[in-house]
Length: 103
Image (cartoon, rainbow, N blue to C red):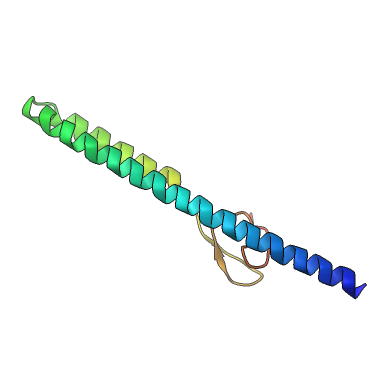
């Protein structure tokens, strides 16, 4: 019986580490997406300067700011603290112990 319990415990640790690594990959992907959105917004800033000379800068600046804000909001992940081990996580499962995120 103890062998089965230890086997499940090791499996849980392995899954916890896999989910932790997946979470890290998702966060890195989100960081890249934010960088791309900011780069896009920065490129739009140059176009907006030309539009400002033509009188349409206010609308273009508001549009670029809204696009950058929307990109940042879309990539933010809400953090939570695992009630079992106290680790802060941003995934559906705790990266350390595998506990599901509370609802």
